[in-house]
Length: 459
Image 1 (spheres, rainbow, N blue to C red):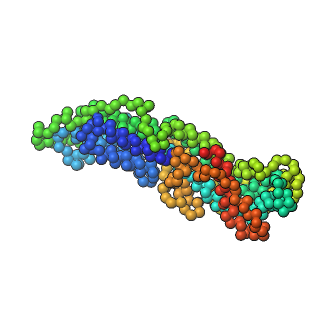
Image 2 (cartoon, helix red, strand yellow):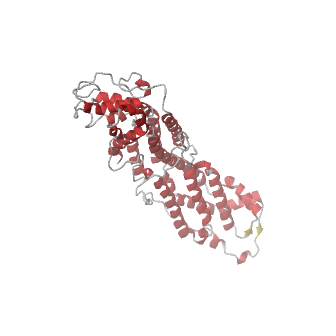
Image 3 (cartoon, rainbow, N blue to C red):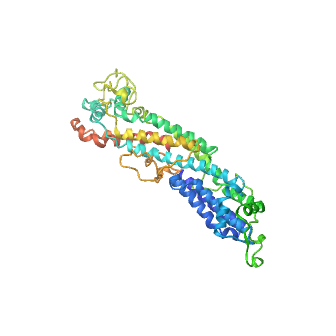
């Protein structure tokens, strides 16, 4: 999606250049740097936000500069000093030479850009959260419980005996207790993303703002041209009567120098083809489906693991001690619910630091999404991620990986063939070596579980 928005900006710039060359000829060519700078600043604002470009000031400068150039073109019989042109610029807001176009365009650009850049940062944040959570190490008690569940039947010669489903749920809910606590803020974040997606489909549609921007600016130029006499008289009254230019009769006439072209009518069907090969409406619809699939991701990890061929819901299963029905009560999700977990010892007084930091990151991103939903400008830094993942603005601030592209796996990097959780490979280790195995085993396990879970939904 990042690529899609950048392509829209490039296409809009090329469309304006082509149209203005045809419509205004040399007059545009001689002033093309003004419009080039306009798009350069829009691109900088999209990438870095208000921390790099003050959009209101940039747009004001653009219209003031355009007024100065057009004012001189429609008044070629006069000479204007720099001080006089500064006076003209100061009266831009009062004169309204371009009609209501500047005000409307400022509002449309602000809402569309804030919504688009915040939404893409939200998409970039999702795999980063998963990657950082996947570095969380398993506790020794989790490793022992997992090995007992999966491999102790082998010691009794019951190779085909599968763990009971409820037994598996208690083990995995104990092992993934901290991860499950992400679910509330994760779901709040996804709700905010879905809400902002609705805005992108409606009043904050980036595509509907950028596609006809050449027509809108041309309309502003036509307004200035048609009202040039009234505008000039008001300027002369406020800034003084200018001096006639020397050798005016030898100059080109107003007809030759003025903007005499007329803009072409805009057809909403004539949309540019982007690298994504789709329109924003279709792309957003697809993204919304994927966002909905990701809801309750963390709280349903145990259920996803405790399913399939490795687990059974029948009564003749491995319950941790024998081939029999599992009688213990199944614990709820989250750290607080594991105080009485019969299969995994969980210290509920020590929440994982990495996961708590990611909860804070999600909260902060959610607040930015809600601000963007209201059309409020925010600044999300394009800096490097910090080491511990606790830096709110840095986390999810870039979108350089293929997972962010519109035609790939937008949220998670998934290999073509899902892999099984790597925790199963510790079969030949002694259970007393839990401390040595703990580090990194949960990282591999959670990564594998994530990939296996998401592959059917995100391909």
